[in-house]
Image (cartoon, rainbow, N blue to C red; front, top):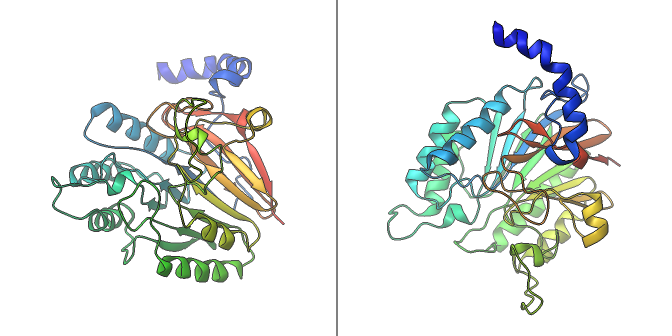
Length: 333
């Protein structure tokens, strides 16, 4: 009772401080709700690079983030985790993921995407990484997978997950998966609605790659254009994506911090890069401090889908802060 009274009295001061300091510290005075709850069609939280293992600080940060998600005033239709959900793909790590997610209800649907760390099993782990991913994806999301890649309709919108089929830093994508992807995109486009595609790795040479792959860049570094991206299949995947309108491609992997218009004007890249109605979204790392942009932790993006636009709102779910100066609106065509 005393705490509630204090919160009521202090709310105006908190909002005033938030207004003054939000360019650096974010908007910590605003509640977690959609900008237009009555008209929203899909409310989607997206994060990447959770890197969960048995360490208590990592477990606590994920608990904090999921607690924030489940207490949103506008409930989330889906939480998409875009790879590296575990730190090393071991079953003990996946068990921790299952345990933490079981303690919360962050969204109506959970959408787990395979990352390169999720495939980093070795001789100490008897189960292959693909078996573990399918097994624990089903335990966490309730979705049974036949392949590492899959699609799902949520509120009438198509979400597609691509995945590397081998343990590799960049992606190893079979022709079978590429053909499947082309068919899924063609089918999704018939609805006339925006399409959301997820893969842990970025399209090659986007979001400042290969420079943003490393924390520090040296002038004498050897440039490898595919480094940090999908790899040899990037051009073919991109060609399929570009065939359709209102396509959003989400990636993580490079742990790049939030970067917006000013960053793009100075350096030529940002977290959200658009070419017509094709939009490439790179997610910051949830678990660790980021680089090449705002380095905050606990970060992800809230995507609000409306009939004529999609709004991206970066948020630290672990700290319950909106970084509203990085908001971006995508008009649908």
